[in-house]
Structure formats: C-alpha cells, structure tokens
Length: 110
Length: 114
Image 1 (cartoon, chains in turn purple, red):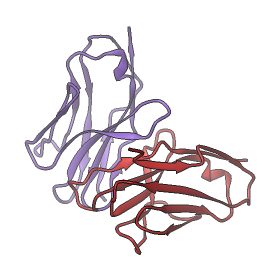
Image 2 (cartoon, helix red, strand yellow):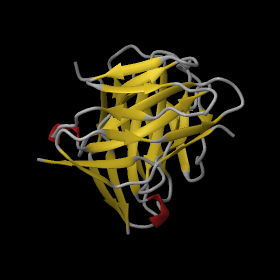
Image 3 (spheres, chains in turn orange, purple):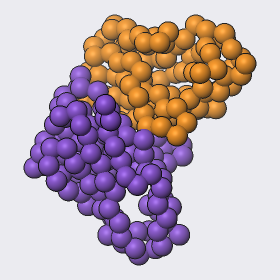
C-alpha cells in the first residue's frame, strides 16, 4: 500500500542552522503530499502541502518540493529558530486515508 | 474558534474497563477521523467517517467502535480496554475526504491502560 518513510531522529541543531528532513514515498498513483508539525502537548498542524509533481509547498520559512522522479518530499528551512523545536511528520493522501511517517523530533538550541 | 475539541485530555483505565472518547468540531466539516499515536510509529488511522451517517475501518480498528452522532460529533469507544491500547488518541476533521482537504487535529487524549 501507499506509505511514507522519513529520516529518523532525533535531530539537534543550533539556532540559524540549516534543517533538512528527508521523506520518500511509495504510491501507486499521484497522491497529495503534506508536512505536519506537532508542538509539545498539542495536536498536529498542517505546515505545507503539494498536490502534484514539481509543486513547491512553503510556509513559515519551510519549503518542500514534490519530486516524482525521486519519489521524495524533503523538508528544508534555511535558518531555524528555537521555536521550530517540534516533531515533524511527512504524510501522503491518495484518498480518505492520510498516511503518516514515523515523525522526526527536531530540537533547536539557542 | 475552538476547532476540534477532544475530551478527556487524560484517562487511566484498568484492563477490561470501557470508556468513550469524545470529539466535536465546529468548522462544519464533513469528514472526521480517529488516529492513535505511538512512539516510533507515527499516527495510525483507527476509523473514519467520510460524512454524517457513514463510518469505515482504518488500519487498526480491532478493539474499537465509533459513532458519528451528528455532523459535529464523532466518538470512539473502547469496550474492554487492554494495555496495548495505551496511546495518545487524536481526533481530526476535514471539509471533505478529497486529497486537497487538509486535516485539522484536536489536542489529543492520553490514555493509559494498566
């Protein structure tokens, strides 16, 4: 079935460092791809999405590009802040079901 | 704007006890979902309701039942709790079941079964 695999964490960075979280997917069709973020004690929030190949989703300085040729949707941010400390989930949605990766915990130190 | 509200926030049960997790959304969304979150496994879909009056099984439905009470409310019931059901449960809703309709999540219910 359709699934996503994302890099394992935890990831620890210093403020202003560059962040990349790898995500690859397996799908029979062309699903929409998402990144969700979970801050401590909260539910998941949509961070960005892309609905077709070569689309770039962006929000709050984060970007991800839907790469059909490499079946990837890597998340990047050029300069992280302490407030970006959270768990990040890659997800795909071919229909009703939204399938999540295992999540990557990111900690940013001042 | 409350969004998706889940109750309770925390619950401890003994093996064999039953309970119902409540979820309500005020965004007039058609579709609602229940997920469980376990360390290292991401979120797994338990049940979903594409629209009022319909429910369907997700990846891990065993041991659970759901009720779509009306358009706003979607409850999850554990009839006989087991330690394997210790988890954080999230309710979510979306305008529709289409690919481009993002999910909005509640803040979760942390359940411990002893």
